[in-house]
Image (tube, rainbow, N blue to C red; front, side):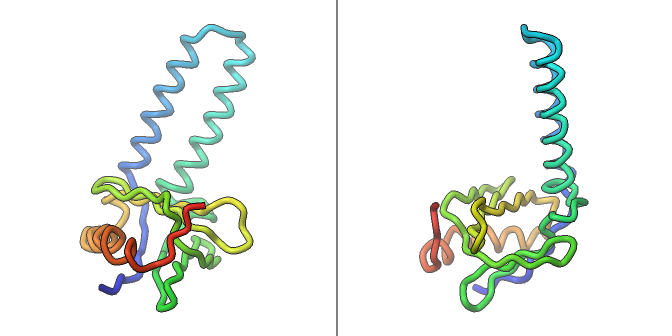
Length: 149
C-alpha cells in the first residue's frame, strides 16, 4: 500500500477543542485561591500557549505549521511547512492513532525535540485519512523503523 502525499488544511474541530480546554482552564484559574498577580501570570502564559497551539496545529496559519507530509521510498517521512521548509525524519513509537484524532511524532535529525503533526478528520481528505490510519496500524508498524525515543 502506497501512501499519497497528505495535504493538511485548517481544522475547526481541533480549534474548537482547544478553545473549550482554554475556557475550562480560565474558569479554574478564576475560581482558584491564590494571589491575583499569580493568577494573571498563569492566565497570560496559558493564553500565549493556546494562541500558539491554535495557529500552528489547528488553523495552520503559523509559518511553522506543517502543511504536507509524505513517505518516501527510503522509509523517511518528509514534512513541509507553510513557508516551504522541509524536514525529514522517522516516525516515533509514541504516535497516537485513533479514528477521530491522529498525532504523529517524528524524530528529526539534529533536532532535540520531536516534531508533531495533529490530524483530525476535517483537516484532510477523508479517504487519505483512512488510508493513513490503516497504513500506520498495519504495514508501517510491522516494517519500518520506529524510534520510541
